[in-house]
Image (cartoon, rainbow, N blue to C red; front, side):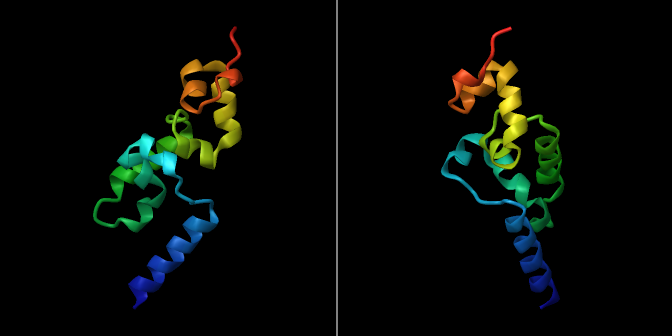
Length: 97
């Protein structure tokens, strides 16, 4: 019962932090789709956690998941990276230097 309570509390915290899967996340791949849920996967938590940390760091700003959690940072990245802007469907965000 304690494990189920802890699981439910963790899931609630993740949802309150903004977790809301979107259909376009399928383009980001399985590991990035699992990354926000890394705490809920006890047997295999190190790999999703590693990718969650990289998402937080900005390593995957081309992904839809990064846009969901850090939209301002991703928009800024799109200003200087045309492929990121294209990946998000906003080529106009790219500013040629």
